[in-house]
Image (tube, rainbow, N blue to C red; front, top):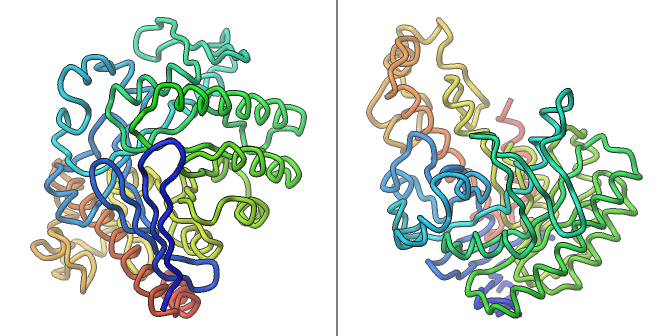
Length: 386
């Protein structure tokens, strides 16, 4: 029998029940305000309150139990207060399962990185970050408290605290300064959350770039604040895979094992396997939907470019054995034709397939852990995934 643990955390009513472990890999069920989520889980990204080209019904049909929304974008358009008036993001977007919203910090700091040749669009202080909207140039202030208020207005199931995501090649001086601001904001956020008694779960974020001592310091501090869950940020932003895995090796042993652990922005299958082996529970990435819009699909035998001429007369589905709507009904030749012709159905079909691949992949991972065969599964997957 596996190890059983039910944890009700200190900020919200989130419950996290661990069922089985295989080494450090584990399966669990996370109970949130809008339902249960089986982990390890991949979360499709719905930046503007929608996963691109997918309807909520299609997301449900492929097995998605939780999606992401973006605080920065939804705050600017249509506005969190409008969404609250419309009954919250779940009702507004016709999605009745859990939603995680990020803090918008990554998008805000990306504005500064993308405009190095211009007057800075971002100003950082201990109180928060001031930025200019990419839509109309208007100025706004995100504080740790305001970011939680916005996510509360959205009706998030899981809210991420404001953090400063330093670029992957930052020098140590800047990496430490960004980490310390992240810690300051995290403390302000958790204190505010307790005062306001939010019903949404709130996750802290570990930073520190790829400096082992900073990662250790950050993990210990964020973990001490007793969030509902802990996230690892600032990875998969330009550093090598070896540095990513090393950072996980430093951080994960320092995070509460009875709480969900979320590796932000990571979605490549090989990276997910490495992280699951180390004990990560949650993942998200825009890659499956982004590459789908460029005609690329993910299969258990690797990635394929469906616009390749070799598929022009191919009667086979995108992937044999796949149960997604695209593979059950259409040939590679037809999908290629749609993509070449610029028809929207083409990218809808590749998106459906890619997201269903991610759901099947996570289902297989959970099954392997429950059977205590995760390492064997990992080796067999990587042998096929070329």
